[in-house]
Length: 294
Image 1 (tube, rainbow, N blue to C red):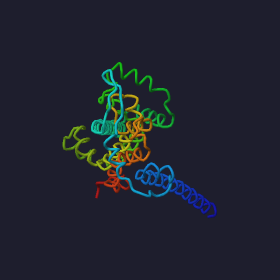
Image 2: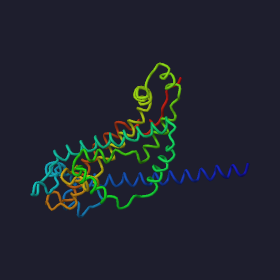
Image 3: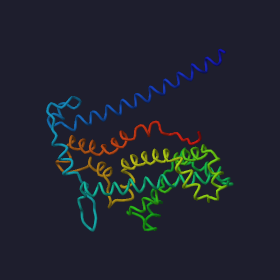
Image 4: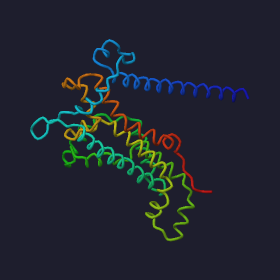
């Protein structure tokens, strides 16, 4: 009895410690976002003399300046061109939608095959996924750039879709465990009725994991919206909003070089992810469940 009490007590301490770390991390993120929000309404003198305080006068023009002047210069067609918000948003939408679908569909296909069929290499595939998650792959960008150039996919949006069409990562493990939790009675009944394996997958199994699919897709959308490294490396002529935000810190434009205007641009860029999270927070936070049998 004493040993069990000690184990329970140790477990409670570990859980409490983890929750404290999570709370500290959450508070730090919220505090930083709040500071950026307050600073985006400050004027030049107010920002320089009152960095951490509330704005003495709310300057809404920072947001209009951010919307009007938000751009990124790129070298295209033999000359330097300015890409403004309209083109940035278009590139971002094509990038996040296509890449999110590719990064969600591929692990579904592979995890379905490894969970429903007894292949000899299932364990090997699982091992490869786990190893790639544990060990960092360093120095692969040069080879990836060279290969995408040889295949004619470099600086093309379709090339990004092919690049993100991979099953390596946590989503594969999530979908595999979800498929395994589906009762075999559904498939067996369909087999008796003469349904093909493709029909069983598309008409029975995939609808049963629609909730998990939606959650993963939403998370992918938010992740790719904030991804600036991939467009920076692989799409230099198709900049996205996230890439433009990264370049904003090096801007020589006197309007965009003003920090409150940069903060206003960051706040505006964060609105889509906030809308997605607020709209689907219940599904994201508590929707990782699947059922069907009564």
